[in-house]
Amino acid sequence: MRSITWRLTLWYTVILMVILIICGLAAFWGMRYLLFTEAARRVEEAVATVQRLTGSEEERGNYNHVDLDEPELTSLADNGILLIQITAPDGRILNRSRTLENSFLSPGYSGPPVLIKFNDQDVLMAGSKLMGGALVQIAYLVSREEYFLLILASVLGSLVLGGLALAASGRWMVTRKALRPLQALTSTAREISTNDMSCRISLNGPRDELYKLAETFNQMLDRLENGFRSQQEFVAATSHDLRTPLTIIKSYTALLKRWGKDAMAIEEESIQAIAKAVGVMERLVSDMLLLARMQARPSLEVMPLSLGDLARETVREAQALSEDINIILDKVEQVMVAADEYYLRRALWELLNNAIKYNRPGGEVVVNVTVNSKKREAYLSVTDTGPGIDAEDLSRIFDRFYRGDPVRTQGKGFGLGLSLAKEIVEAHNGQIIVDSHPGKGSRFSIVFFDYGVSPTL
Ligand code: ADP
Image (cartoon, rainbow, N blue to C red; front, side):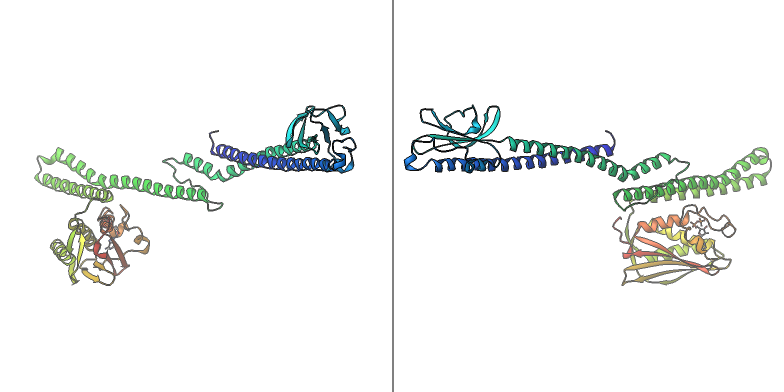
């Protein structure tokens, strides 16, 4: 009884049984009422007929002349049996029908038809005073009606039982079929393991609630699989990126141990290499930390911020650091956005850094601030004259640890910069749009919808 199929079938059967029993009883009692009302009408008609037959003045007090078995009376019984008896006020029987044979109706009852027992049989009996004071009693044997009702009850009973059995088995089959996707869901869930998350429920059949459940389940698995895969990639990429500086530190430490104390040059080189490796690790760890913090949706300190000022300061810092690339602050429109300065500076820096890193020697980087006041949008764009990005790479550059062609990128980053920038910009109700022409350059634009006013901030 644990399965839903059984429980649904049971409930359905019980409810149907109650309904059928109520309908059956209503039909039975309705029919009984009709039959007995009709029989009572006949009895009353027979009483009236006897009154009429015995009613004339000259025949008063003499009831023997009336034939109580005459067709006018018997026809009223419609092939049934009428028992008629006339008794004097002192209890003497004055006349009776032959159908009574040797029996007598117990004298005394006068009134409308009632159901009583006579010789162990059910009869409808009525009684009435006749002219002259005598009492006529007429009983009608209801055995025909009872027989009909018995047949009706057995037909209704078998119909209820048969109908219930049919309906229950039909219901069981339909429910089982309808719930089949649930079984598929269970077995798929059972098959899923961390090694193989590729199992999916095959979607077919009508688009009902279970179809939607299976669809949602599959979507959930997609998300889980993606999350799990990116987790694995994350661990693999981090370990890989940490291994190189660690190997450097390890080998230079061994070198120092062996020769360092005696050779000044080796000591100097080792210290520099170790410091560089530590710097790389520090950058990676800080990027990862920031990314993790962004994904946990930090509460940003949002304030009105001039995009022009931010662009100006960042460009100045970049100019100081980059000797080879010409960094220009081009058109700057005055616009204020709602933003957390620390995070937004970081996002802009990631774009600028990439524009410098991936540029050709002697290339150019142009920074712009523009506004579309009709759409209430502000744009902060960074355009470079680098190699551009292939269409294939474009869809993936915002993924964590994704790095483009290793020949072009030459291990210049960890593949975290753009994913960080994206997280930051999205937290500011914005979006990063990329427009890239392979061989010519790329433009990364931060769009602030509604000037960065985000309901989540
Ligand atoms: P990284 O730290 O490796 O630069 P990012 O997430 O910032 O990681 O960038 C991902 C990849 O996108 C880079 O490896 C590079 O291939 C490509 N990319 C990003 N910015 C540019 C750009 N301005 N020009 C060309 N390629 C770029």
